[in-house]
Image (cartoon, rainbow, N blue to C red):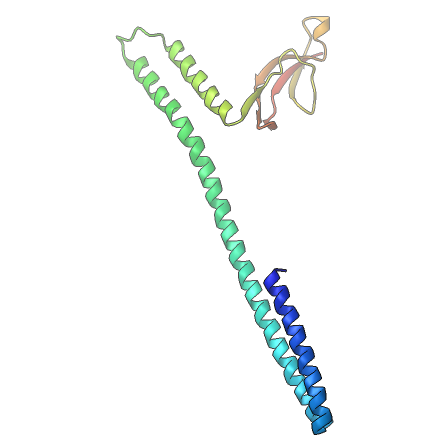
Amino acid sequence: MSKEETSETKEEAVEKKDAKSASKKSNKKKKISPTEALKLEISTLEEERDELKDKFVRKVAEFDNFRRRTSKERLDLIGTANRETIIALLPILDDFERAIKAANDDTSTEPISEGVMMVFNKMTGILGQKGLKAIESTGEMFNPDMHEAITEVPAPSEDMKGKIIDTLEKGYYLNEKIIRYPRVVIGK
């Protein structure tokens, strides 16, 4: 509750006390009949009800506006996040187009594998800046919480039993949270 609302409610309480005491004084002076006193009390209660109803309607409208505004801000944030990632990946798309053009050119002396390696390094660098990190798994002990086992093969040596022999598909962390589990082959 804000200071203004608190002060308003205090002021209203003081005014009501003053009104009650004034009505008691006037009742003593004028000798108002019980029905007139009840009518007066009903009218003050109706006014209070109307004020509370107005405040309620305003709060509901204010909350509805808040909900709409936060929903719009969330959608804008999601769109902006995707936009930044796409803009960061555009230079890699340009490099792939150059590599394709160079591969189709018969006079090119630069090996294609070198160009592809450059594009790969650039892409891993940009994705690393965005928080992406590969999960190293080959040679590690198999952990069912961290790895997805595809198959088991006989271990080439005794020390490779229960360890990951090969990684079929790399897994990745995004800001220290696993977004894809590595798919691995385990030695048995």
